Image 1 (cartoon, helix red, strand yellow):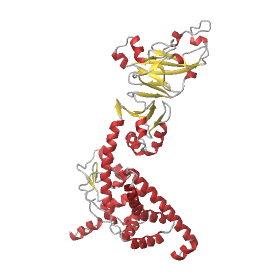
Image 2 (tube, one colour):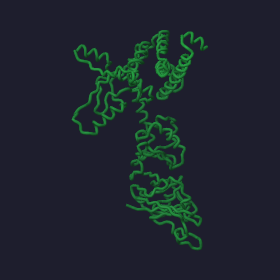
Image 3 (cartoon, rainbow, N blue to C red):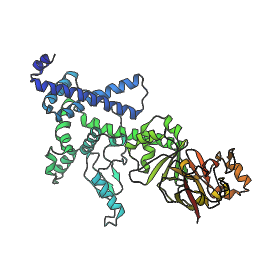
Length: 466
């Protein structure tokens, strides 16, 4: 078979291997890209899904195989191959629909982002706006680069018309239209000489890939611009849909966001997880960490790269909170921490080896429960403790085994027995470990963690009120 292909294409044995490899890799890239777009579009797998998928594969394959061929020195071969194939198939024209108006999109390159941030964070003599000369050709080049580099739906919207102080009034016009306008009005058209160098990725798309594809599909540029408008409309619908789901799932409590784990995971949608966590500094790569966290035990957490926020697994909830903020409603206590601060008090932690003289009140080898804790101090068996611990406000349904009792008691009933007022209840915090409350802060420890004759190490917690 290879010999017949060599003869048909008039290539050598090494080149035929490279060509077949390009076909295989280009096909894989096409299928992967089409699948990703279908996932974004969320079309049910029926006849419509099949039709759209086939159309996407047909559109993407020439771009994919041409791009792959660049890296294996086979661009010239595939340039002719795609051209001949297009001539045999005829010109495929994409269906169009009009989209009126242009609105700002989310994508900025790093240089523009830095410049825009500088304008908005520093006093500037510029009192209105900064205008750039980006045009429609720049827009479709950005779309293609984003697509092959890997992007979400927002990256397929191209260049935004406006962002903070930046405006791009020429974005609806093609370069050839601007050049013609300049000539008719006797204006000097200035172009950077580096625009002709193919060592830059954008110029490779501008000067090689897009012109080549346009020979097969003359409407390529117009179709890509139409696609940008379509993706922009889809993005708006996507944001509305995500916004409604986020309102349903995310419950704000002070500076924290509480999300039911089972409900979030029931969507089985990585994009939804990213849309929720990205606002707090988490990256797309951390979506897998969130999925793993959903099956982790209570108290586990992941940290944002900027260390500004944590996502804490607390029973059946994800809690997104500022990293150990004094206003946080849930605070993670890791092993070795000496001081923990919340909005109402400080906690000091220390540990030491136990002996009967340190524990005190030994009477014939029997420990006095009363000696182990007071309103401001709690001493527990360190060997029974597994970090991390969770410091949080109490909630309905909480229960523990009060010191000296062998039966559990709900905190609501315990508070009644203690004759606490409504405001005193609202100010009550607990320290929890693996869904077990070990201390109702300032009141009582759990009997399961008390010091016994077998205790070898003691964890001491001191309460310091403001």
